[in-house]
Length: 221
Image (cartoon, rainbow, N blue to C red):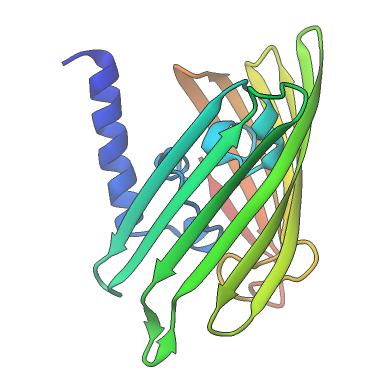
């Protein structure tokens, strides 16, 4: 088996396991990206491609590409299913990237409480490259429909990249209409990553301002 096939197989196994039993961070920031799940959601400094509509929208314009990704997960204990699709296009217009993601979850949270919800993330990104340093900015519009209400919100992020080897990222999630439910919390995430596509070390810190009276810290790496 070639190295590429082995890497794909291992990534699929890790992603499937994380989809089956979400971590606390994943439960608070719903994602349909298998790569993000495989990296334990430490993606706010490297949210290129289909990770960007879930993590940091600034990453949409970091790499020139057109990408489509679908995903499906099932949680046996709660009989919940989650399906998603993400599309990124930064190749048609290199100066401004567009992308979006749709997530659907079906199941019951507890008792008769309906756990079905739909979430749509749509956004854009642009950036500036000067020598070995690049600065990228992006924003996302969120729409979520569930049994409680329809909500509209937004997230904004920035990534600073040095030689595409060291990346620093920060993003604010759900800045305008936060709710205490998973996926609609007001959070501030920052991250740092070192490496390129073949090997990357990444670490994220997220402050959740909506979970309790005191902000909660979430770490991922």
